[in-house]
Length: 568
Image (tube, rainbow, N blue to C red; front, side, top):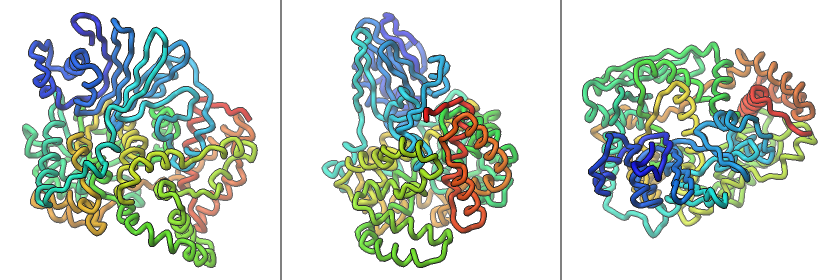
């Protein structure tokens, strides 16, 4: 869209939910459309970069100021929408997907091998980094300004979770006030995000977060709300449909059960790597991709519960970190005891946790809680010795050290919550959702990441949200009487995907084929004998290297499909 005076032009991906309120506050009474894009454009024309902080929504956009000869790239506060860019001395290229950048560049940049050490831990690049030289991702809550005359750039944070969560800004209100405000902000967020020109539905798993969205959406949706849940054709995969059906019946939704056929998992893995543009570890993108494929024929916008765990303390690790000092003290004794046990998956898990809580740096402890790998260097054994030396010099914990330091004054559990909101959510979970669903033209909205709700929750001390380590205590209190008790009081069930079963079974041949193809194109990069040995140990139950093998599988598929060549 171009402004009336032709000074400003915008290209924009996403939704701003408060655009009507923003237009009113800025006195924009002469709008030519009912489109949020016009308000985004004109708000910048009126108040400049101050407008970015006023936008409540999910967005990535570029804005050109023709008069001042400047270009701005802007990304939403929590990184719901992606924004990649390539910058050299001649041009800035930007897009929502890496594939688009590669098409515009007309070539595939070399792999940035300095990022592989981090990637082997997390199966995804973190922060600004990608696995391509010169391709970066704009951080959430940031804007990049490019002067098109000097071609100099500056990147600035227009919003900071660190600032919102400081002890000085913490909320100290009566408990009943916290409960009521949480409930009202979540309901307002759901009502805002239901507004659409196309049919809207809800992905309903039967858990607390999706059930809360269904409860509030049922109140505010015009007509009968459509809900969707999925079952997988694999006995190793938990079936969420019975519980979701019970929730749907409670709220009287038009409920649809989708049966996902996982026989062509290999084809889906390849399609998803194309959409991510990089190897991607979180296998939950597979059922999400297949579910989006089925749903997109009926609706074009869906609400989902992502962010509820990070914002309100839904993970066991937050409670575990409350005992960090005690666990740290006993880590050494536990390690000595575990070494005496026979080789098994149990022994491997005990040693892992002893290693995690034996760390002096809490940032490293937090980082290790989010990976199956450890700092012994054994994960790198899947690479050839010479290649291993190239990548071992970088610090795989650097991003976690850096981000955790911003929240050092908070309690350990709250620190991890803030780190998850800064890293785990944008770099893994939200990327998974965006690529899996937009591949089929399905737009996912996430009410728990409404910025009014996040700002409020970030300022509540951890012991008020999770007293005595009780997961989602405050959220559950706010939903009592709205969401059924069988949901609020039921056990948490994770979104587990049987990738280990797939690797040992239907994907085995596909994995081996890609290993062999990769070896022919890139000799002296992987250590095939080590990979085969880890596969054998996992298959025999003497240990579990399935996470590492799944990452390596995605890595070889990516390198083969994108024709990545390594200089060894």
